[in-house]
Image (cartoon, rainbow, N blue to C red; front, side, top):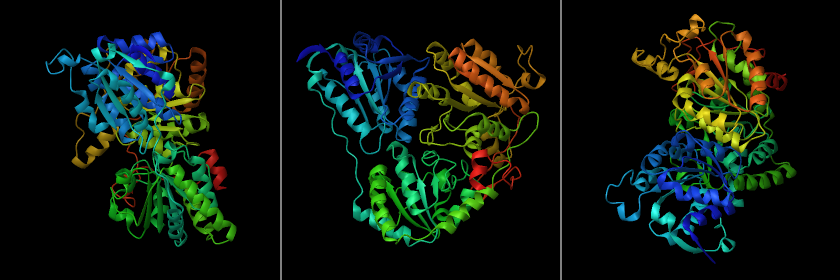
Length: 596
């Protein structure tokens, strides 16, 4: 047993719990914790330019690799409120991040002290636990509990608020005697697995909906194994994208109103049974519940009991970690396979494959300014299966999800439910911290990119290289498209004549912000593309610049101002604004090989 400050105990616990990657901003109220990190030396810290950016970096780091828990640190009041959007994004997608905020001394909490705010009350709805620690002796137990909560059941963020005097207080603590608390995850029973498979095998056209819970459970290989044993098509959700590779013969595409495929919606509407594993029936996936559920039987597997029946009541619900559920289902399915009692779904699989071959959207356009579909076609060619994509919201993300291809778990990093503008850049930096040896490619529209553009300097300072593709139509594209229903185009244009536009083409000059100059001013490299024939060379050059300078490289693509992206109000009412390809030529090479 040794006497030490509470902050020294915190840092020792962080290292023992395996959470050693921190993102934040030092300041007066949190300086004791920073002094402990400096003295201990076991925590790597990345200095952000904005505390919201730091929270998104921690989020991206946690999403990058199974088991990661990113740490976010900030001073007092404003830092805590800046973290709220980051907490929301993490909580909405079941991502564990641990946030520490500095606070005024305990005796001054009720005196409206400088930068003192009741961050515990503010953060509680967006965390698994938010706590202002008022007694020094509670600190080790609160941190211990935080790790247990973040890892147990449905993962999520925790915020611990540390008054200055609590940070400086001396306590007795022995790190060698410290042990992490057990992680609690429900497990499907054999009887539940048997019933679920009884229901599946009674169907003629079953589907598996693979949610983000499968990726959180690091169970993508189990999903593929189950699908192959049963020979049943798989529909990944946006958060589950990559749980089964896009070039797998059983991949049926994404269903939904926006981030979806025409062929996947058609296949889903023909199905008569759906088992959802680790998903939450998000409204952009389902459309109306009446249309989504009509004529289908549902089994829902989720780690959180209150998720079962939240959106609609399934015919059978199983509370289980996705990995444990898949293990139980595989065990029973293998026994039935050996006994020869599994139905033959080959014709159903061929039907899904046929739709996939016939209903690809068109991508090959030679227009100048560039159509966005062509950008994603060229990205598919330029970036291989090892690529990790990072994106958040907007027409750029919706079109990207419709047209890009992902070949493994955690290769698509996306703030799915919250979709906060500005998330992409800082989250990509966190992903690079978590995947230092992989190619990371971020995708933003111009507005998302501008929201937290200052965080590019973090990538330059700490040599965190990635490629940031910015598709620039100088519009709030998704909002403009949604305003069509109101017959207006109101305050959604970002275009203006830049008075510093010397050297820009007439088109680019009218788009307003010179992203290339801004990126270069922040210490990064940048390329502007205005002709679709130059996209491939630009992506090659971006790779070379990233390798040479070890900084973020921005590839700005000047798009046509208005392109409407396919979306709708129901699964059978998605408006296609461009002609479908209707043939294989516009499909990516890996998909063509699969379909042929």
